[in-house]
Amino acid sequence: MVLFSEDHIQETKRRGRIEVICGSMFSGKTEELIRRLKRAKFAKQRVEIFKPAIDTRYSDADVVSHDSHSIASTPIDSSASILLFTSEIDVVGIDEAQFFDSGLIDVCNQLANNGVRVIVAGLDMDFRGIPFGPMPGLCAIADEVSKVHAICVKCGQLASFSHRTVKNDKQVLLGETEEYEPLCRECYQQAIRNDLQANGD
Ligand SMILES: Nc1ncnc2c1ncn2[C@@H]1O[C@H](COP(=O)(O)OP(=O)(O)O)[C@@H](O)[C@H]1O
Ligand SMILES: Cc1cn([C@H]2C[C@H](O)[C@@H](COP(=O)(O)O)O2)c(=O)[nH]c1=O
Ligand SMILES: [Zn+2]
View 1 (tube, rainbow, N blue to C red):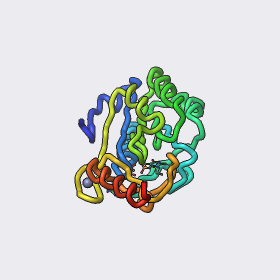
View 2 (view 1 turned 135 degrees about the horizontal axis):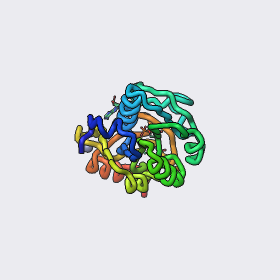
View 3 (view 1 turned 90 degrees about the vertical axis):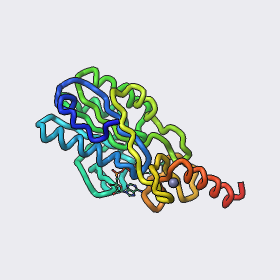
C-alpha cells in the first residue's frame, strides 16, 4: 500500500472515485484525510467536508486530529444531507464515517458516479473488534483503501485494535486516551482476557 500517495493524476483528474482511510483510533486517519483535502484546496478544487453531528469531542464544527490539525467542516445528522450540500463540488471529505447510517454507501457511490472524488475516513472496527457501521460496505465499494496503524501502547508494534479501558458496553462512546488505547492483536487479546478476569466473567 502506498500511504502518502503523490499520484497527482489521481489527485487532480476530475474523475469520480472513492478513497477510504481506515484503521484503529490514533492511527492517523484524520491527519491523512486533512492532508489530502488541503492538497485538493491548494489545487483550487471545490472541497466540502462533513462529519457526524454527534462527534463534538474537540470542536462542534471542525474536523480535528489528536495532534490538533484541523479543517472546517459541516456537521450533519444523516448521510442524505451530504447530497444537499454537494452540487458544484469536486472533492467530498467525510470523517468518523463509522457513525453514519448505512445510506452513506449509496451516497458515496452516487457522488463518485457523478464525477466527485470522495475521501472517507473511519474506524474499521469497534472496541469489540467488530466491523463498524457502514465501514465494511465502504471498503467494498472503494477504488482505494488505505489501512493506517497506530503504535501499540503496550509493545510498540503496529496497532489495529482500539481497546476500551472503561466499563461500558454501548457501541458508541465518544472518547480519547482516557477511554481507549491502541493495541496490536496480541496485546488486544491479552487485554480482553484481563478484562474478563477483572469482571469475573
Ligand atoms: N499510540 C499512538 N500511536 C500513534 N499515534 C498516536 C498514538 N497516541 C497518540 N497519537 C497521536 O495521534 C495522531 C494521529 O491522530 P489522528 O489523525 O486524529 O488519528 P485517528 O483519526 O486515526 O484517531 C498522531 O500523529 C500522534 O500524534
Ligand atoms: C473503538 C470505538 C470508538 N468510539 C469512538 C471514540 C472516538 O470518539 C471515535 C473514534 O475517533 P478516532 O478519530 O478514530 O480516534 O469513536 C466508539 O464510539 N466506539 C468504539 O467502539
Ligand atoms: Zn502490542
